[in-house]
Image (cartoon, helix red, strand yellow):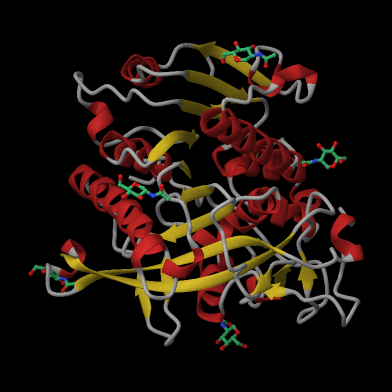
Amino acid sequence: MKAFIGLLLVPCAIGLTSRPDEPIILPTLNNTNLVGVKNIAMIDENRLDPFTNNTQFRELMVSLFYPIDGAPSQLLVDQQASHYSGKADTVTPYMPPATAANFDALFAEFGVANGTFSQLFTRCQANAPIPKDLSNYPLVMFSPGAVASRFIYTTIAQEIARKGYIVACLDHSYDALVVEFPDGRLIHGIDIDSRDIVELMVQVRAQDVSFVLDELVWSSLLSSYNINVNDTIAFGHSLGGATTAEVMLYDTRIKGGVNLDGKLFGSMEKPDTRLSRPFIQFGRARNGPNEDQDREWKRLSGWKLELHLEEASHTTFSDLPLLAEVIGLRKRLGRKGDELLGKADGVRALEIMVAYVTAFAEYVLTGKNSSLLSDDGGGRFPEVEVLRRG
Ligand SMILES: *[C@@H]1O[C@H](CO)[C@@H](O)[C@H](O)[C@H]1NC(C)=O
Ligand SMILES: *[C@@H]1O[C@H](CO)[C@@H](O)[C@H](O)[C@H]1NC(C)=O
Ligand SMILES: *[C@@H]1O[C@H](CO)[C@@H](O)[C@H](O)[C@H]1NC(C)=O
Ligand SMILES: *[C@@H]1O[C@H](CO)[C@@H](O)[C@H](O)[C@H]1NC(C)=O
Ligand SMILES: *[C@@H]1O[C@H](CO)[C@@H](O)[C@H](O)[C@H]1NC(C)=O
């Protein structure tokens, strides 16, 4: 089943080469805006959760990333695995503790040292005050792969926010590896053991995205910030890519979508489905024809682009390769690491994803064309191939 839905967590060994308990700060791309992050619990009182046999309201966690004022830290430009050095630098744990412990356990059999994930930190500023008026920042929604966690896309979300966007990363309860609530409660993922469950998950996930858009406007916590959800861009990895297409079919607040290396399960599998708003299919280079992708391509009836990233694996479209590099693991794994994580460099892949998602967002929301969206990508990333456009 894991191969069937192209799950994220292929076996790969992540183990620290540094001393235990030594904080490791993940790299950032550019010395521009600072980014704040808030983890927010949401309950949908209009929806019973099918994964609780409809006994409870659907609840989920969202990380909201937003640009904040303030002088960028000196260390922001450090591309190396800069170890924690300056007391003045605010860093934030990459994951909350129980989530980190679950990731340690998940990777333990592949040689991950216990405590690895709790040693990782980002340069997001946890709970930094949200600017009073967010209406000028376009909103980007992100949906993760199944059996993953929104946290393993933190660097992608953070870098997009740094360019002047609000990014809302969702966890979809019961298919995420684990969802950790502020009160310490955990919701673990269920077994994804049938196609019916995958179909159900895509439906529930799409409703989650729409619900979060509603909450960003109406909830008492967020309503005062004037977030404009009517012109939203959505993207997702793996089953999150399918989620993106699914929700776009009925939620017209989302003006464009990007699928990172996902198969489009759900309504996009029905022959008559047409998704008429702009969409990018961004995946691994393929070996020869792929019938699924050809079918999906036909069902995209608006502006569309299919891009391939050379030497990528499924996990390239997450933080995992970057994590492996930062902790010195890729070197240690050698060729095996390349197979599991893809040969593409993690920081470079991050730069590419951020560049394409933001160029696309700008094009869709403001009409401003970018050379990145032309056939040669303006020469900026030769490893990205335009397979077709329409
Ligand atoms: C839902 O019902 C099924 C069948 O009765 C049971 O196996 C499962 O544990 C229930 N799930 C929850 C979350 O209560
Ligand atoms: C990992 O470390 C934590 C905290 O020190 C400890 O509670 C836990 O039992 C350890 N797990 C394993 C599998 O060693
Ligand atoms: C978004 O659309 C809704 C429904 O059409 C409308 O009521 C609302 O005023 C719009 N919000 C903004 C910020 O344009
Ligand atoms: C980083 O900044 C440089 C110089 O301003 C710019 O050319 C480059 O595109 C930026 N990179 C990213 C990934 O934003
Ligand atoms: C602008 O967009 C079109 C259509 O998407 C594309 O074909 C073209 O190459 C782009 N041109 C430039 C200069 O970015």
